[in-house]
Image 1 (cartoon, rainbow, N blue to C red):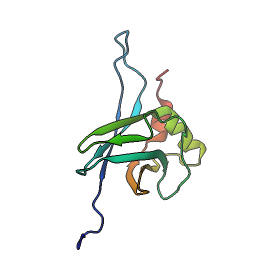
Image 2 (image 1 turned 180 degrees about the vertical axis):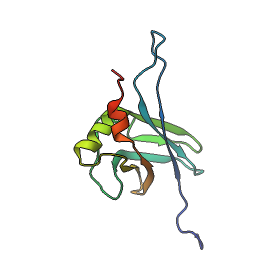
Image 3 (image 1 turned 90 degrees about the horizontal axis):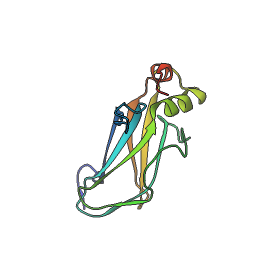
Amino acid sequence: MRLFGGRKRRLRLVQSLGAFRAPDGGVSPLHVFFTVENASGEVVEIASVRVSPKGEDAPLAEGEIKGEVPARLAAKESVRFEVRAKTLAGAAKNAGHSGTPKLSFVVMDGEGGEHRKDFKLRVDEYLALKDE
């Protein structure tokens, strides 16, 4: 029983931008990476992941987020999900969230717990990139 602070956070979420080294030595298009780390001492299942405008439930770029779901994470283990920045930016803009919208990376665990990481996406900058 926890007397202070309520339920302990079981998952730690991190959002970052980056690219891959391409086989030809070049650089891949820009991606948004999401890392999910099991911060608890027990196995946690990741049932689903999505990116939504902050305060909304509607998913953006549904089906475009790459990564294994469901996933079982042992204690201190992590998994990464990714989506092309241009794809996510376009989905946000099409949903009426242009400029620098606030988005949330949302992970549902196997027990129905919801974990969120809020971040800002500079849509207009990403759409202007020539990353093809």
